[in-house]
Length: 267
Ligand SMILES: [Zn+2]
Image (cartoon, rainbow, N blue to C red; front, side, top):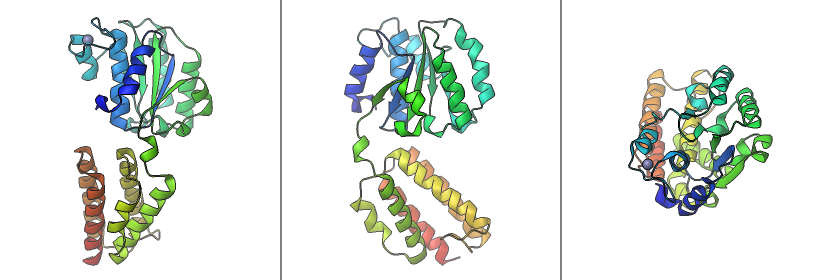
């Protein structure tokens, strides 16, 4: 996974000699962003680091296994709260056990405003040998004040991703297909491909629309038997799982569209 970002690896290795108190990693895929932040943490702490971590020592292994005492992995999806961030402050004020402590905020683009501000406050009161790393699909999802206080690294492949407009179009074609059985399958190949993050967002959006339909809102999934909604939700979970197993994204979406269309037809 790291081999796909040789430039970023070189930059991170150089940054390790004087790391910023706040770093933003944007672009690429969520897994790449997390792996790269751990790479930097290893470089900062590995006793055998030479132009990068050894990747073999006990310390490198602990970081990989998420059991390194100086690594805090926060994610809004795990129910991160302002209280949680405040509770961390006294810990962050102490010296790290090893050379450097890292606070990784995965999915930083999903932070609510209170959590984003609480984290910003911590960033604004830097403590030596603490490094905050914010991971986001794109920097525009973060507070402008945070961006201006951070060192930003952009992973490659950002330009090849589908634009917001293309994602919107893809969703429209998908929902049309569920009703009519026409269009979507060919549409998937014409546009820029969705990244893994975008594909997950696409599935999450369908999940939300399904819930809305069950509450009686008007959309392509409305007026179905409860059994059909249940089956669609199960199919969605399988699609999420397929993505996490790295099944090709266009195949997952095509299978999803066809299965939804069949469920709707036999409703
Ligand atoms: Zn090592």
